[in-house]
Amino acid sequence: MKIIHLNTYAGNGGAGRACMRLNKALKAEGVESVLAVNFLFRDNPEVENLSKGFFSKWFSAAGIILERMTAKLFSKNVPIPFSFPIWGKDISGNKLLKSADIIHLHWINHAFLRPEDIARLANLNKPIVWTFHDSNAFTGGCHVRYDCDHFMKECGDCPVLKYSGVDDSSHRIWKRKLKAYSKLNLNIIAPSKWMAESVKKSSLLASADLVNIPNTLDTAVFKPSEKLEARKKLGLNPDKFLLMSGFMPSRKDLHKGTTYLKEAIELFINNHKISPDSIELIVFGNRDEKNVPAFPIQATFLGTISDDEQLALCYSAADAFLAPSLEDNLPNTVMESLACGTPVIAFTTGGIPDMVSHKYNGYLAEYKSSPDLAAGIFWLYKEANRPELNVHARQTVEAHFSEQIIAQKHIELYKSLLDKHV
Image (cartoon, rainbow, N blue to C red; front, side):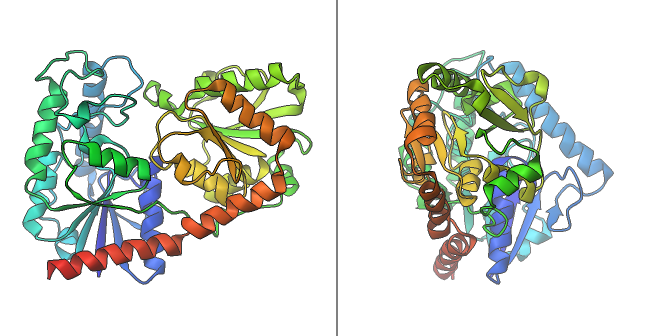
């Protein structure tokens, strides 16, 4: 059984990390699994590059830039990423795909696979699996939906586009996807129950075969370290109550909820008369220090952490990980934190409740409620049995999201599809 995974990037963003981890987990179980990407920022011997050579690489890079420029030109200044599938490539003749038994799609935007390119894969007569890392596959272009229900109809009158109307770009993209999907027998993987429910509500894929299989991670890397030792290695104060969070760089990533995080910390400090000097916020991510908002407590900016072992050490050093996302499928950061034995305080949204159980391994706050997020911080600070929470956090990942468990679920799906395909 040979599986070919397709993603735009390797290790970049949540989808890139998720598919690389799945690829590794499948290999560990003896599956012949290959990850191929449209664009490699740096050479990686574990990944096949579909844009080899100088001209191919820069052609792909130009497509990525043009797609992002188009989105900026035709989208309103709102925190919702939108993709215009104008540029892409036909890879149906690629030798890797022809040699595979199953084609497994992941995140394929940014000038990689347009709806028509996906439809051409049907010519290979192989089962096609598609993991939805965001909502784009079943919308007219947006990746984050918030409370928009247009995906349940035929899109159009898009609140993201500058030039909106019944037959706007979102509706035309929706029609292209409808035509493409009609040629395919898609087998969808929804990493979260929330994503599965969303797909079932969509007008494009409500009747498609669907299964809920979470993402995984390397539990041998993301594991608990002794808290004081982790702080010592990172040069962090051993006596402070340490909160951890991550930021993204773009105005299009405001769904990460930074504003609510800032408000919650302010309320936590002010309502409970907490000394700001006793609390510290650890920030990681690829936002530069100039763009980090001012917090009422000390904020230590760690920058981009590309080494997973270093990142695991950061999670272990913290007392809690704050995830104020307003919409997220199955965020890697939440799973990583739990795997390191660090409880998570988050809004009740997306796939987060699949991982965080209220007051068992973290705190689920009311959606968009800064006061309840602050209450969660205070609960962990003053009332919770932290050692017990730490144990529960790790146990949750071992029981439900370990690489062996998730790999086996994928293998069972692959085998069932091949049995049907014979």
